[in-house]
Image (cartoon, rainbow, N blue to C red; front, side, top):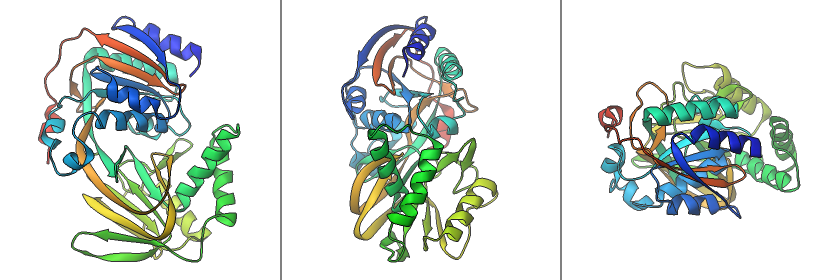
Length: 350
């Protein structure tokens, strides 16, 4: 994050808060700061990886993943329990969550919208996916897409700038030189259903876009709403025709999930498990998490309260921590009175 954007955020929020700026020192520090911050709102400026760190820090403060998955904290979360709100100022490459929330990609415009939402005390709740012990806001995956994320991370560490072109080049190179296109390793298991084997690649989305191609979302399901469970899209073949078919449907078909002989869709799951016959690449929210042989995925409804000027948003408490891409952190103590709980979250509570 440039000094100009930092100054803009500080000036814009100065009328609402007393600000204290800190700088993190390493990857994962934003998660630690979010977990330890005694604030009611965390504002993240950065990409999806930075947001994921902060979300996991927030979710790790109170009930643990096992308690949430068992419903131990679900009622409190749905009613707007003790965890802080989160707000997003996009500053990364894909900015999938920010776009899904309707935020402009321009930092100045996003800051104005966030300030307006904070001043109005508006927020909504969204569900999260839980992959083993890692929360994700929009997607996770095993196989080829995770391999691409791994390679992009490696290239960025060598000084390459993240871009759509970098991702496309890496996808093509990994397709031809890296991923195993002969032996499918993945099996999906669901309670009460026979296992489905012979899968090369799986995408699990939190009822949100998988990613964006320029300004257009790739939607594994139409009309994503963040509180309708997890959706899985899997490929039975890693062929260019299969990939182009799936991507084309996600880009242009808005009435149904992608269909095809070599495509598998599972919609609205509360939980599912993916097993691999060999160690396989794994990513969540565009963050490479290493190789794995089994991951249990669970849906946590109404897990996170997020600042938003959206239809259905409601009033809520306002004190904040701001963290951004270069990982500066700003503590904000806001003086607005706490608002009423969100009726939308209560109405949709499971």
